[in-house]
Image: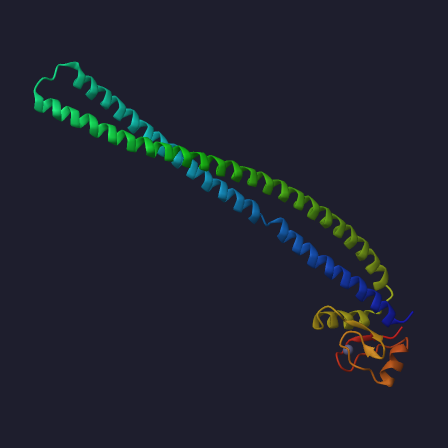
Length: 233
Ligand SMILES: [Zn+2]
């Protein structure tokens, strides 16, 4: 087998290793991404704050209503007790009772509104809670699948590295050095195949002399356009 053939095998393995490396890095960054869960948790916190506010607001109105009812009862009791006999005082008391009744009616309207708002806040809180649980389940599922993929990539990497060792033993040290240099300079692709008289890496048409030379097994031939090692098969 020619050096170019072994270099092509090495190239195939290194390209697979490159893909494994790229995907492994992608997976690592996907595994550290908790943005969907965090978003759901932020939403839940917001919903909880709103819920507490609405609970407090209702409690305050209930207290106000209660205080006004007591005041009204006292004033009515005074009014009908017969203890107040002076007409002006009676009129004042009568006016006070009417005013209290109007205030109470307004407060009771607000109490009803506050109850409705609290109910909405409770519904939103429960929905937000369910969304957090959903996001947690989704994340756990996604992460399990990504970890499975990572394990499988790691096994492939080990297998490829063993194959790589075997192939490397077939390649002369100076050719290994040329290959490594080209890998660095040519975005990872050091070896190109000849397909339909063209270089598979850069697409330029090869001269008959180049095509002929690429078949010669004992010396390396380079694409005159992109500089990569050519393998003609
Ligand atoms: Zn080329």
